Image 1 (spheres, helix red, strand yellow):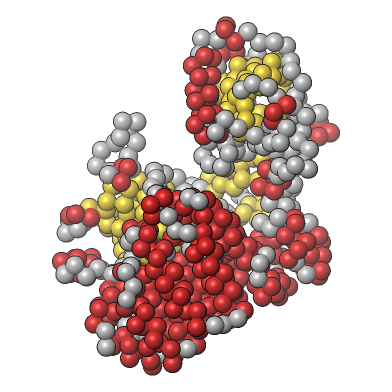
Image 2 (tube, helix red, strand yellow; image 1 turned 90 degrees about the vertical axis):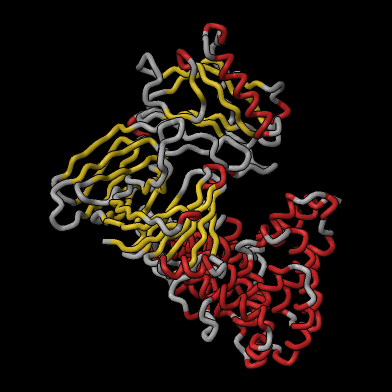
Length: 622
């Protein structure tokens, strides 16, 4: 059995419950000669998740040995950013068994993985018992690591005392819960899950917390009890936010009767992924559109090129599972396809091509018209012979007035803001790929605009029951964007615009960290923080997309992958230079792709594919 097979089984077991052990993910990249046995993976999984139910200090040494074996196979690079679950888990065990620490410390000192040894030193530090402090004081190597990692080693951080949790803190909480059964850790994560973010802002910690609570509640009754208890106390907005991501079958399994009744009273819809992408052997897909008039594709000069590209994508990304959908689209009442949004690629005269994975939906939408869906059956795919699905000529029909919907909301403008412009655009469409990845964004079209001299109630009528995007701009205000489904979202509540902020950054190349330059960026929802010296071949400058979170936090996103943000915490540039010269930089908290920038924190940003390595300090927001 290969490492991949072992990992897949472990992944379904462990990651399903969101006990985030990211080092397991690296197993997929290992060759068979480094394979970790399925038996060891399953053994460690059972010990880890079941420990709090039946604490057995006698198995701790074995857990340390198994963890060391996996860490050694992965290597130090693979261990970056994965320490939190281990530190949380073992800190609780060390705290509960002070008389066994000398014995376990001998096992720690004999480990072959330096990183794993450091993680366990961190767990001793966090446990904060007299016995643990004595061990650390007598071990110069452990003390040096802890000073580098935590700075002040006189005051170990206490996760339960923190006002807000980062995604890494969530990992530590779950590890600590599995090591102790302490409900306070679950309550801490659940309260984070109920956090309400500002409109248009994604709270990454709250999002991760919601999914982790739901997944762990599915396997651990204590988590389900805490979840139900806090849901009973939650406001309607918090309640909707949390239960709105819970699939229907889990609502039945995990929610207590009175909580489930509240779901029905508030009419909390099922999550989008459940409504659009459910495909089981029992699922009856929509009938395929009847084939229209035959199309002569040879009349299109660009069809063959688009078709060959689609066949390649189908083979490369879909593993041949699905079809290449071809056809020609006509729009009732007009001579072209102006205003149509679809993930299909169009050639001349409305001819289209799209690789479509089995179980996905290819959708054509236009405001004021009936959506046209091509839902490819997942289990009946063999009934459609060949690689092609030729739909012939299809017609997008006007939507009868009786089927249109209306939406409304209240708009609040800051004092002194004279006017705002409100626009409606067609919205995002479902994925046509096998993994919900970025398979190309369909063109979106604006079709309705209202200029308001003041706030108040805003209404739009005659909408198609489909996804839309609401955009609001106003002088000196942060650009507002919100996606919604007109089929279910009739009342969008109150939308309050916020004044534009000005963020100040200090930036330097990592290898020239003595040369800093100051950049001021208006945080208005559109302006990027650009830092490249010259544009790429497409004329684009590298930069971050910045989203306002609150007075001291911004969300930063960099489009190219893979990328890493190393957060060194609150640190002056002078202190960083001093520690850098001494080769004594603290171990940072690392995030990928997107991170929350905090005023005063120093970050290193790395993206190998763009040859980017720089230091970034968010110094103030005005």
